[in-house]
Length: 261
Image (cartoon, rainbow, N blue to C red; front, side, top):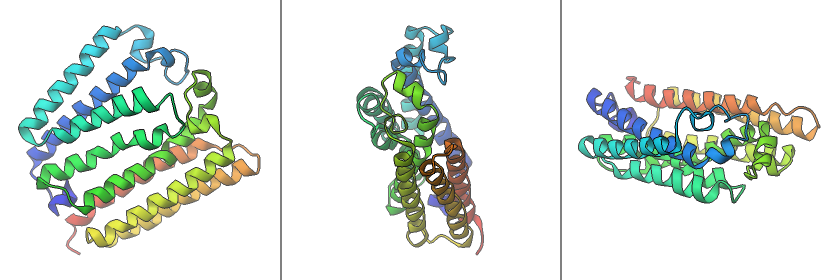
């Protein structure tokens, strides 16, 4: 939103968009937990979710999910634009959770599109339209998602295998997953550099994209190297590095337009 405004947007608009987006994301997460409650009970990573423990009933969870979806849609319809938010919920719940997740090891690649919508929502809230810059950010998050999530699936490969969810980390060897992580990490960094000429980014963003991107790629290569050599890949290093990388990159995206140089 700051990049779209080339400065600080109206604070109420920021507040309204964040509230609407949070309600939308909460709705998608609640639908996901309702639909996955059968497998969540058999995975250590998810066995304490409220639908598994019985703290929340399936009917209560479904009611909560639909309520959040309705409230977020009305809220964004009043203050910004609800269409992209509805699309994000649909993509995460129907395309990813219901169709792809239990059928293909490429589930997180295409299902991850749902996580790309916020950049379009934020940009359109400020400008009322879309241009090349938000689509580059969309592609950036799209390319970042696999090397972010696949290391996590390596960590919990046995659990995914037990519930027959074909995450790449559970269906392929560590070296194969590591190679895919490298390729997507490089593609992510390359995509981040496209924003420099398209959005006229300055020194802060350029340096951040190169330095933090280089670190992300380094951790990806380290994962692959350890897997090939037969050592402990330590995939959670890449998982946590990916979160830090994207956080710092978006901080740079926000700071860069606010500077006078």
